[in-house]
Amino acid sequence: MSADSLNIQKNVDLSAYNSFGLKAIAERFVTAHSLENLRNILTYEKPRLILGGGSNMLLVNDLNGLVIHNTIKEKRLIAEDEDFVWLRFGAGENWHECVIFSIENGWGGIENLSLIPGTMGAAPIQNIGAYGVELKDVFDSLDAVRIEDNTLHTFSSNDCQFGYRNSVFKQALKGKYIITSVVLKLRKHPVLNMKYGAIKQTIESLGLEEINIKSISDAVIHIRQSKLPDPKVIGNAGSFFKNPIITKIHFEKLEKQFPNIVHYPVDDQHVKVPAGWLIDQAGWKGKQVGQTGTHKNQALVLVNHGHATGEEIYAHAQRIQADILKVYDIKLEMEVNLIA
Ligand code: FAD
Ligand code: EPU
Image 1 (cartoon, rainbow, N blue to C red):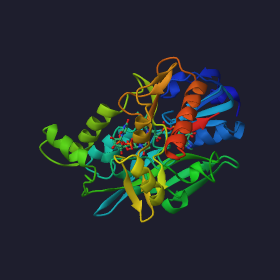
Image 2 (image 1 turned 180 degrees about the vertical axis):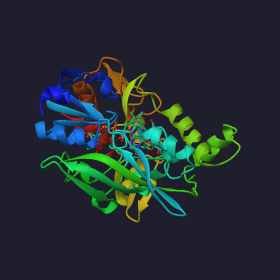
Image 3 (image 1 turned 135 degrees about the vertical axis):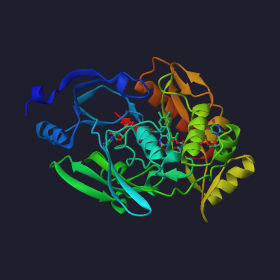
Image 4 (image 1 turned 120 degrees about the vertical axis):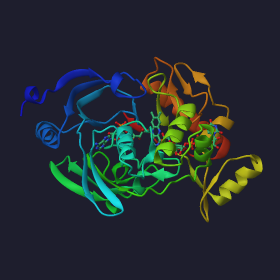
């Protein structure tokens, strides 16, 4: 295979390919539109970066080597029984379009994950989650090509080692596989999930008559649009840090100092604390520093005010991390993938 026949482009500006809108030049850039095409590309060159929708990455530098933009498309019912359907989606499908497709067919399970930006293929990487549901709840399996030897492998849910904003693809297998398709198991008779109180309230306030997967999706979309900045208007990558999980002992100490601290139980010995609350209370919410800062409605979302560089956003993230460590003795872990 030659670079010409694969249509490899040179010196491509990635500004339009990442939701922070950061300028970074890819030395070489190619689109993989099918499994076969991807495997041909891999015989030519191994990638420096796999790019989906670019909505969970911080590009800090220009990139030497090859960026592969995954656009593999497929939406197919592959099996069904009385209660479930198994759907195979290409890794390059837009996540939200797959949610809408499922809702239109009456299949339940991912309606709470409406409007999450990005691609199907990136969804397992951090086990996307929102409003009481995570990808792992509907995940059946995925196919991925091992970069090292161009072989195709199937991963079960166990193989993926899903956790909160985590999977084996962010740990031991980081950078080793390219996900090409994902199979989801959805319900023909949906079980509605309204653990998140705001969903029911929003359905009522929007005057939606029935509670079903469509109205849950509409409510989630409404809530998200009221809280989270639209990357088309202001560059961001959603939550920049994970919500930290701390010990109960640590939490009880903090509670004495900060009686209003928001928290959620995890198990007998741990609680989760919203990073947005910590950053907000430490005085960073809506604060602009140069071209970056935190969003005025959501302190957990770092933003690009127009001309920020990746380095500038990263430096700001480190300032926030240092401050949160000082104030609460909590180490915030980045959720966004640092591409440096
Ligand atoms: P990219 O940013 O392109 O890639 C992310 C990482 O995965 C990179 O390391 C990349 O190399 C790797 N990767 C991508 N595709 C593949 C592939 N096919 N094979 C192997 N590796 C791959 N996330 C949530 O979980 N919940 C939310 O509620 C949420 N809300 C958000 C709101 C906003 C406004 C934004 C901007 C982001 C939000 N996110 C949320 C984060 C983001 O939408 C998800 O992480 C999403 O899955 C990223 O998809 P992507 O295609 O854009 O991934
Ligand atoms: N809060 C503040 N100030 C802020 C932001 C939040 O006090 O500036 C408080 C809120 O009042 C609330 C708590 O913190 O009591 C949690 O806030 P929110 O409900 O907005 O959710 P979050 O914990 O900030 C998480 C996910 C989101 C997901 C939502 C809904 C993480 C890191 N983030 O956000 O995911 O959409 O819950 O389920 O787990 C993402 O991963 O990019 C993302 C957006």
